Length: 145
Image (cartoon, rainbow, N blue to C red):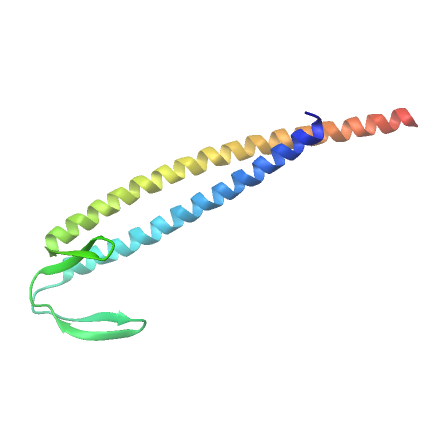
C-alpha cells in the first residue's frame, strides 16, 4: 500500500471515529434528558397527596383539573402495557430506571473517552504522515531543480 492510500484510509477512519463519537455524545445527551424527566416524575409523585387537586397535561399546553383519589399510578412496563402500582412502588421503579441510565451514561462516557483518545492518536499519525509526504515531495522537487 502506498502512502496516499494509507493517508486516505486513515482519513476515512478518522471521519468514521468522529461520526461514532457524535452518535455516542447524542446518546449521552438523550440519557441525561430522560434522567431529568424521571427525576421530575419522582419529585412530583413524592409530593402528591390523596385528595389533592392537580393539573394533568392532556396535550401541548392543555391541562385538566383532577382530584387524586388514591395513592396509585399507572406505570409503563412495555410498549402499550401499563400496570397499576402504589406511589411508593412507582418511585422505586423510577429510581431503578435512573440507576440503569446512570450506568448507561457512564458506559457511554467511557466509550467516548476511548474514542476521543483514538481520534487524537490518529490525528497525530495523519499529521506526521502528511508532513512526511510533503517533505518527500519537496525533496523530489529540489532534486529535479
